[in-house]
Image (cartoon, rainbow, N blue to C red):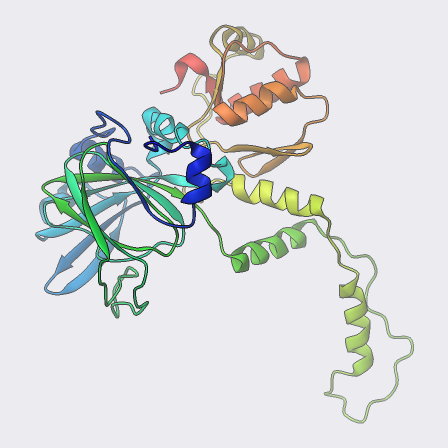
Length: 370
């Protein structure tokens, strides 16, 4: 899918450096769903969907979930965006598996956009890496590495006010365009068009630092309490004295963290499901004995919404940290990497963990995964 490049060559020469157009990256690819199926997904409570419209020189944005009748009264220029298709479609997960040469911890999701002829969401840039894979129809992509960052005022999206394309291509079904972060681009449908966007998250250091401090707040315990047996009368009772500042500084200076704390934070933070995602326990759960008999025959698969990562001596599943301890590391790492493991035979402790995940909706029996 990378043309004549190996994954290593792509990462070395293009990843986060410059765009790459790949003709016929997925030969015969027509998409994973049609217009009506995408509209159906946009009507579900668990999906993140948006409709972007352009009418009378003004951009507008509506958030889903929608009703099917909402699509009967749209202006001429509109685009439907549905995030997290991989959480609903098994084939979405299969498509993403082609990008396993990039760590799962960097993956955001698979988004699909539908636009009628001549429509798009305007010139913009993203703060993450993205592969734009063409499904139904064609789309003209214009790109630029040197745009003014001024935005259209009062627009609901970050649409660039001045955009001068440096290059452009029309992508046909199966063609793919890779863009690094901050590369301005503008996609315009040529006829009915559906584009599959494989996005890779790149949180800002500000976001990471903020979330790490929240993580510390939840996991930190500082003993003792403020004391001042040496208190003296101040000239100004409203003044925060230097002694008080010094005592509190000394206590806060005692806060430290190790690499292990960073690991735990990243594992929990990067595996945490998005707020709109919920897990459905099996409606008629099998007994543990029957579950283990089934996974021994058919294997076990992560639910489409589950994220399983690992680092050093811990697993991280959907925001939960679990020490490897006596667990079957090889099996669980394989499940994390491939999202499916065939014919599971393992120890009691690992079996109990898998059954708990099954009861919570995190995993399912391999052959029963829709």
